[in-house]
Amino acid sequence: MKSWSFELSPRLRKVAEAIPDGVTVADIGTGHGLLPAYLIMSGKCPSVVATERTEGPYNATREFLEVLGLAGKVDLRMGDGLEPLAPGESDVAVIAGMGGRMIADILFRGQEVARAMKCLILQPSIQGEVLRIRLCPSYRILAEEVVEERGRFYEIIVVAYGGFTPVDNEALYEVGPVLYSKRHPMLTRWIHHKMQGYRRILARLDRQSSERAKERHRELTMRLNRLHALLVSISQTEEVK
Image (cartoon, rainbow, N blue to C red):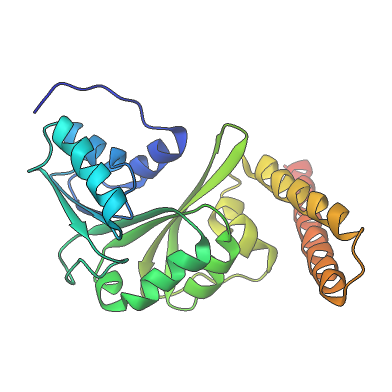
């Protein structure tokens, strides 16, 4: 194996930290192949399957792994979602950098494979609340993280099949019930970030008069109010302490 040094981004570093040592991993939609390369070269994981669904990214990843001398150590496969995997073949799957709706679709299309995993490490780029809503009836949330990278916030959600995570406040689908219950150090910054995003969208919607825009305005206003109430609740809890 050739000597090579590279740094994972803060986002991918948090994803890597969520992976237990010594497990076999499948990185779904690996993209650049950095995560599988890091897992093998660091000795964190003995075996990694990396997948890509289209020829261009697949070939680019293959060339990258060849440069690192990892062509025979990372099992690169082409296919959509979890289709390239057999049930029980990997202990953990990572699905990172996709929208929450797409991640949920991948898991439900590949239910047999997903349910056989010890855990799934999910990093939605958007629509984290959609992902939680769709998974909560049959998957329990084991852990959550949030990390800031170049002014953007990314959430990491670790789930396992069986059981469910009860959510008694719809705002927690957006914020993360585990992040909230554990009062993550970045929790208030994360909530403020989401609120700022909603305010920007609402400002644009204020200039539109269509019924669809008005309905979207009502929906986001409701979300904004729920998040504000959550901040008030956190503040009151901290004052009691």
